[in-house]
Length: 621
Image: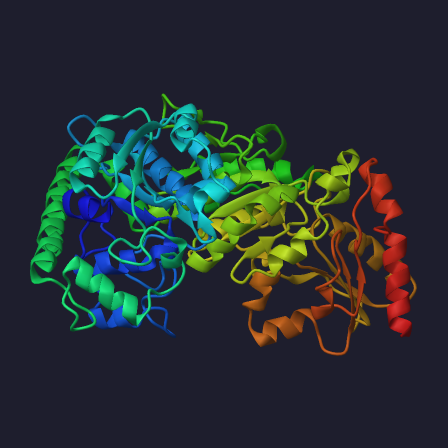
């Protein structure tokens, strides 16, 4: 599979791994990472034989699973199974949208494929089915998956757990399906060629292969799946395949010459594309400029001057819609959508239609009830380049999205998630739909910016931070219920961009600091008024983002939280991690209730009175 694809079809330039019109190759079966490392070395990428010899060693460029930040030519971190498959749908979405948006007759400047090698494990994971369903529905004809059908998983034959008709499943999902002998390069060649001609469906080529091929005692068994062959079996395998026993790392000169021709071929491909782009630039200068800037990661910023401000009560989900559309009017390469919740999350661009199977030039992607596939695809869109992307759903469903959020953080992929219905304010839907532990859980992931705004103005600041991020995914956590406008109505530089700030200073040197996020900031301002009336100087700190606050200077942090001043945090969620910043906590350390939101807040102690009582108790400790 790899030989045929990499020597006959894959358009790439080893001397410029980031050439924009390259085909994207995703090794979804990331546990087979040495296959990819071997291909990169053989085809002339900056990966030496010594790098291969350092496989899985400390600080090597050949870690156990491919990592995009470690190795040139690796498109994404393919760790947990099916993530590569899910992300590949996002890569294909980006290519398809850019092609539909920017190509003109006689100017095919976006013209590449997304190729995947996937395993049985990938296809067992639920993410692959969600993603395949979406890809089939949207007719992503330039997505081609090579399925390594070797009938072996770690525990033994796949028949122990996986006996479904894979081809039948993918046909039902709207894919073009072929079955070939995966040990026959000619058969694979013909299948890829046929897949290229099927433009209205994604393609999967089921390739029957033999795991551990050539090993006299371990071929075709799980013994060659997760463990080394061992020195004796390596010797027997080399003898069986006619490979010299010495040196340990042997590269046949003829094979190397075949693969290494990719260097010259790739340079020629990029040079031809540069000529095509030059002609395009002459014919369509404005489009070419927009695309060139997007390819370089220099995304539009004119929208900053058009961010709205808010002075009336509004839910942050609705404020988010106002902000999003103000941005979209001045951001031509912003694309995203919802997991069947457009009417609830409001993460929709009003002046664009739906990206559908017969119209790939629209900017609203209807992901359907496929939350995990949505975030994986948004990551893929972002990693592809040329676009910025977001996805929206309820905050409680971040449980379904977490593996892809974590992977975005590892890959330094600045994708954006819009999570609404942020806590027990969901009300009558009850505890299954009321996220109480999720803020703490997601804040625990390194390199994730969880941003929970307190009003519309902080919501605008959150979107600004998210779109200006280059290495960190952002989770915008928004309310269902209306919230009062409490924070500065500034556009250019809202203090929320620092993660935490003094919203309301104490009347004199503070004896107490109340820290609020989201809808609970209003409880802090109400409690401050009562505490000040009792002669207790109290300041209020808004803290929408722990992540951003931790990036500030020590001096700034000390200005927000002076030493020796007691602090009380107020947030409608788990208090487990709040002792990091506060001496006492008002929060929710149980599951929610089914009732109107105001009654739930009162029942669970999220009231001004309880904040005051907690503050007084803290001062007396």
